[in-house]
Amino acid sequence: MTKKTLLMHELIGLKVKVIKSSHPGLIGIEGYVIDETKNTLTILGTKVWAIPKIVAEFEFEVGDKKIRIKGEELVGRPEMRLKKR
Image (cartoon, rainbow, N blue to C red; front, side, top):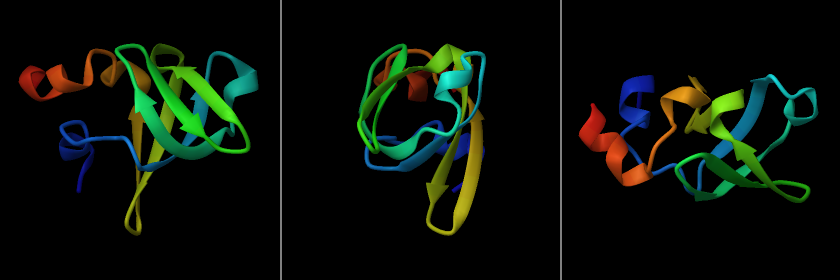
């Protein structure tokens, strides 16, 4: 899986970490994606976090690969990402 193909896949269930953010309190949050909306990823870690996509850069673990994606590339309804590409 590559960065391009990850954008066309379901993110729920993937392990994720917030690498960069304009909000310093969000950096370092990690866990599993349990929900996704147009503008947020809900991550279950030590607690449940709703992270705005637009302010963060995420690192997804897919198998033994780590793929970084800017949140602004994920903004939009999940089902519409496939149509955008």
